[in-house]
Amino acid sequence: MSEPAIEGPVGGVLIVDFGAQYCQLIARRVRELGVYSRITAPERAMFTFRHMRPQAVILSGGPRSVYEHDAPVLDAALLEQGVPVLGICYGLQWLAQHTGGEVTPAQSGAEYGRTELVVTDERDLLRGIPQHSTVWMSHGDKVARLGPGFEVLAKSEPCPFAVVGDRRRRFFGMQFHPEVAHTEHGTRMLSNFVLEVAKVRADWNPGSLVDSKVAAIKQLVGPDGEVVMGLSGGVDSSVAAVLIHRAIQQRLHCVFVDNGLLRAGERAGVEALFSDHYHMDLTVVDASERFLAALAGVTEPEQKRKIIGKVFVDVFRDQAKARRGARFLGQGTLYPDVIESVAAHGGATSMIKSHHNVGGLPKDLDLKLVEPLRDLFKDEVRALGRELGLPSSLVDRQPFPGPGLGVRCLGELTRDKLEPLRQADRIVREEIEQRSLQRGLWQYFAVYVPQKTVGVKGDARVYEDVCVLRVVSSQDAMTADWELLPVDVLKRISNRILNEVKGFSRVCLDISSKPPATIEWE
Ligand code: XMP
Image (tube, rainbow, N blue to C red):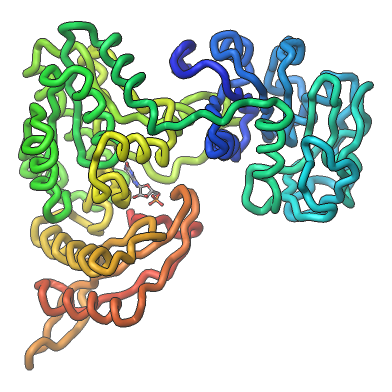
């Protein structure tokens, strides 16, 4: 388990992860209230509690039953620390079981979906919540009997104990999920618990972390330590690099690998910002030949992803070895990457795509990690980036996958296909960004589909490939909706691609949401 024990602020809200798919959402909602939150696995909860000294605890939902013999183990000493506890779904059931109550399978089987909540006691936890509202249930078991001290605060048709509480001990529980958007007043309920019941001060501000992050990097790296890091030009590695650079200046050595799968202008943009503007020690390695040679003849998406990841590690390893003095590896790892590596998630979730992140650690290098963003969510990293003075074009840019155009160019990767795709992608970005249409969009890009179709250009018949336009909105890339650009913009993008780019006879629009489609095509 990779969760460090003492990193991160003291105080805030500790969230015990019983394997809930919504656990990260709870943590984000709490931080959006201006309160630091941290997720821990149940078996580490007391350990983390002692280091973090939280002012409140939230127990998440989870896929198990509390009466299963191998249910997640949480030390009930957590209930004796004098801090308020909110149990959500499975968390409520655990709370009930450990305070003298009883949990049974829901009589009518599992209950999922929207339910009407009827508030019967609108003090503290449910203050300001209308008497009738919609909440999102998702559970197989339910509380059948409450332990001493507990009373009912709200009920729903299938569930007489929808919200319960023991005011004296400040223990509360909800059988539904306040953290999901389908629960109408969920944010208010969480806010009531954190700010009113637990009286935690809302003073968490990621933008204000610059000084403490810089100090921590200085301490970790020491007075003469050197750091090598892969800089992709994406938000995470850029913010991490600027922070590390602020701490140790020229003892940071950045490596930008041109894998031949970059967008138009990407390499020049990174050089202009980090080398010319920040005066960082930046090495640009043109490894496009090496990548394309390794990818020759490969058409299977997963194999392409794996080769791109492996060649990146090889190239980066050579660069890191050349900097013999460097004992540290800088990375832009974010909090979701750290949480996802904790084995509390109720078994294996099925792997859909192997993600390759620039900066992946070559194991044999024996470098210590410097990861200044590992306790932050993406929107918090953006706030930090703004505070550091990074331009909006970088901080607010759309995500670009590690394997780059490689996962948007179907079939074998060749320069003949990558170059037209790069030009089409540039046109899509130009047309959208010139009109500031990118607000509200998660990603917008072109895809190369090597399917010949007949067209006519000038007076001649052509037989060329298909360019697909993909425009999506999303909160977190877990789900996404396709978005329709204004028709005049679509017309202009289509005209420009067909007239300016050689290789396409047709432009098509992808109108697939995720799920079932994914955002990238491979
Ligand atoms: P999918 O295609 O799975 O993508 O819907 C979800 C989000 O992840 C991005 N993506 C990646 N990001 N390395 C990354 O850092 C990768 O290998 C990778 N593959 C996909 C994708 O752009 C979308 O935002």
